Image (cartoon, rainbow, N blue to C red; front, side, top):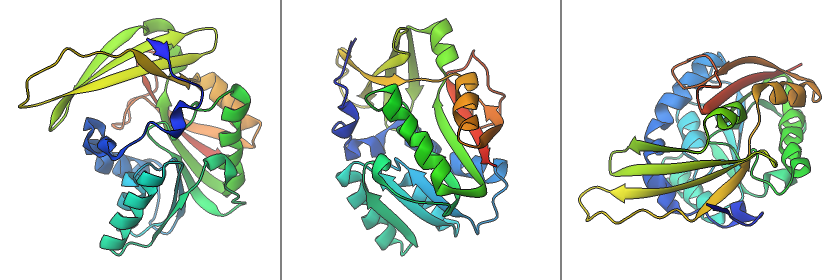
Length: 252
């Protein structure tokens, strides 16, 4: 695969994402986060790079106060429409998350399905997301992120993966740019009930990945510490053998 341009994250997203197989896991993910972070329902939550609001809406249905932020206007418009249809108390903001200015306002900050972590043009720009996280959190506030594990990439990339969804088979291709510490991710879907076409994945999303050790250092410099880490939403312990890396951190 060839890497997309450095501003790839600004323009590739469409509401076709609502049909992806991973969307089907939203409710299970929210329940795991509530249990793991020991949330009561009274917390004020900031959902960074919220997409079309699937997690924000799920938390709002459970009574949480939620603010969702995303760079894609189509996603935010759809999220607002969904919240209005259900009369949910959730605010959606169309913005690059680097541009938001919250200071000690939130009990919980979320970066789910990557949450744009590692998507930006350089290491310096990517670190700005962690600044936003730490600044937005109150003292004692909690952060939960779901990203891909750089240590796994070192051991296992390149690799293929597939996932059976309700309406399509999702195929994924992962490659590793070791010098820049970036994963190249490409994927395609094969819908059920239609003649299959030969999949082609010529370009990949370049995403900066981090090891758990790197994340510990990043959070430490921002007065935060990692509480626990997992490799799936069933609570399996984090491991280099698993691609997913879920990290629960606390602001001191």
